[in-house]
Length: 467
Picture 1 (cartoon, rainbow, N blue to C red):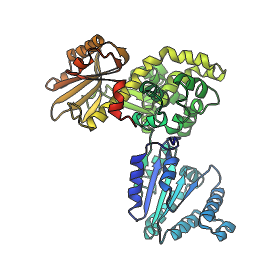
Picture 2: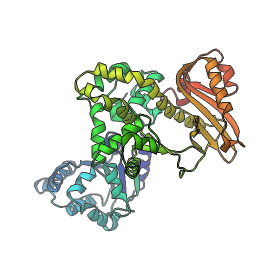
Picture 3: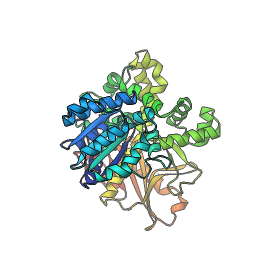
Picture 4: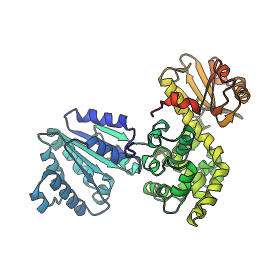
């Protein structure tokens, strides 16, 4: 199993489609650190005429010198080796000349490092995209890990606005794809790993299915030198100039303070400050806002959740216990995590269950062809997942339990779902479901005659044994 590259079929297909156009292409790829952007680019470039250039945080002349050396090696250009390029115009003209007659892929990784040293570079690139590159067969990729800066480079006020022919925002892998990293783990362990690491490939590579999940935590996470322990800080400091208040908000959300009022009370920050910071965190893809699925996005009853399980786990368990980890007491940190881990996993399992429903819906195996899916709540009533088809007036209500249930407990849960008063779907045909960690076999078949019932043993069939 090649753990360096797992499951990026859709992104590769999009790049290959653009490559086959034969025309000039300007593709922007971005996403936060360690999600696999570079691996995607290198896999795409394999067996193609192309050159990969990595921008460093150094001077423009030093980057140009390094690029010249790399290009000289690739094209066997001894003249260039002895006379390195000294301007961005010279670099872009050189690339245009090399792409005039045949397809040439050029990938410039960590492009924001160049812009920080040369703010004029986007304007220079704009001119070449408009006037010089259209007469070539250049396939130019720029890539960056600073999500905020890359989106500003694509924004309305940027010289590059409207010039890209494609863009890919590379995010973490979905739950069903992480099995490729851990073929020996059972589904319970896979869900736990997803709850700890999310779907970021570089983080997943730090764990091994030769070890239990607990041993992975002790040996590969809860240590001061661990990438997994340190990287949350690096990622956030790369995006946020003053992360203190952002940290306070994210830690509050990780502890279950999900409404605006709860976050304000927990952090002690002003309402306007919290609102502004939440907006920034949402733009960066670190926090998501959810409203009851029966309401519009304008609803004032929104709740906030951390979007990525890696950050949710880090802010809920790791950051509060950093003193223990820094002191080298991983066992004490693990005991602190274990006390509340199953409660936390209830939220994670809801994410996984929602993905399972999407997979069943894609295959047409649900009674509802839903166009809207999410949580629903009103007062003290709540539904973990509600899938709606407003046109056909059908609704599927699903309870999710990270628990081992007897068949009688499962029947009680389904009974409570049926008794819920949901006025917004009073005229809908209602169907019911339960997804749990396990449900005892006795009575399970009879439950399935009246509801969608599944547990971890059904995941191989839902997601596919080889995923």
